[in-house]
Image (cartoon, rainbow, N blue to C red; front, side):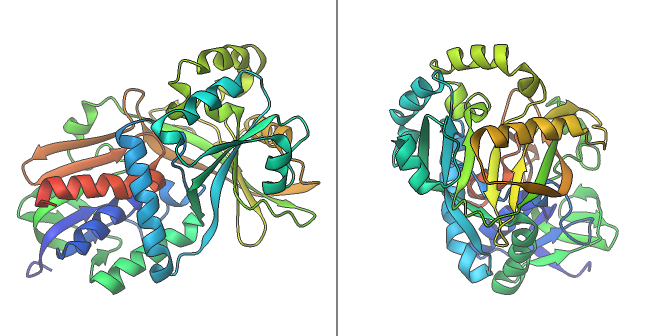
Length: 375
């Protein structure tokens, strides 16, 4: 291994690490990815696979989400990654949500989106409840099955671009041009460290300065008894006070106040609704948000019930059963959506701190690689 030399080493094979590997390899760089696990097992596969553009914070986050969506669309077919569906329907029931949607449509981020009447919405999204008063429709999103897409992406960058991925390998220390690993020393001219929620293995003092914690979320897969074709992702009013692209609009204040009065239990558990559909007809439904430096591994039924109550408030797809439950954990901090830190001239630490890795990682990676190696 000591004889191998690379232009770039990436530590971490989640979506953020793989995105950096792809972008660098597309520029003709020789890349190695180092990961401690045998396969993807963290937040990158414990999510919706939903590349969310609409509702991301205005500015860099929204720009990176648009770019990431474009790259997902470019690589999906050659990488064998199926796009399960496209678009987003934000279905609202509260009168206070309508001014938020109207204001959003007037922003740059509202371009291409439209406000649908209930009748128009039900033509596009079967199963919406009668008390859904309007739907914000966005054509920008796409959805992949993340537990399949992440391994497929890894295989694609290996086969198509010659990226080396070292599994079951722990990066213990970086002193360029050498990275000390459990598989022996690796030589590289530069390193991008994508540690997810591992704050201690590499550059712990640098990471500690950002005051990170962890966020635990609940998710479920449900199976309707009858065939139900959703055709798009669905969100609800709760997302308008969760996603900064809506929540930071002045018009969101009245909605926040009403939800605090009437839905305090959901807000306390960080519940907002996302529903996406898999190829087999099952639905992935979530999620919630609980914060702590070491989140417990338990999944209270009461939190799942809050999520399913909001599902039932918006959609009527008949009887269903919960077929699968899981939790995910990701790095979080209240004052930023992501961080890029440069502990050394040719080293970058990149952590997404908002659960938006699938939605923004490719855009982030393009910015980081351009900064390190030039456009």
